Length: 183
Figure 1: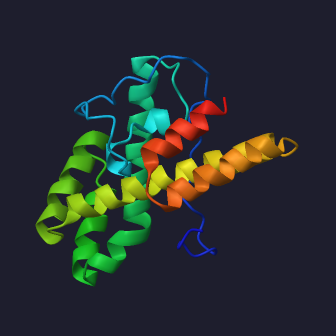
Figure 2: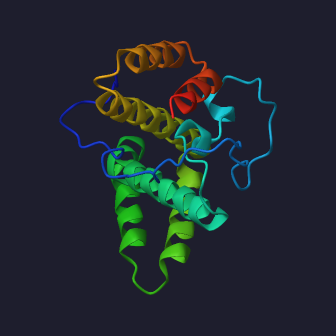
């Protein structure tokens, strides 16, 4: 179960991951991420594409997917978290930065990040936690979708329950292997 209050619309609801295409070959490492030993079970070390069963996508599609995820996390942070971390004066300054129209979106976002890093020393850790939460939520959504798809196949539902138990035990590599074996 999620600890997110039900009254807020989750950023997970607004994002649709690429569709899975079965394949026998493993997914390549995420761009910009070091290749790690396959024995780690932590969610941090798992390839998002493997967790979601997306193995047939071009590097360009994967890059676009990761960019979109990053933007979803950023927008959620600005909409839901920043007010809890800043004073009203700092919020006013942030809104002024966000309201500037004399620069492109990337330059504006960079200016906002620089501003926030000065005020929130653990900004990077907060964003990492939000990314890991989204990663986990997306796997939960995958399992929910698979439950619907396999509703009349008890052996597959049992395998999904086992995957959920693995997820609760933070054995994310095993979760991905189990889900991907279902097809």
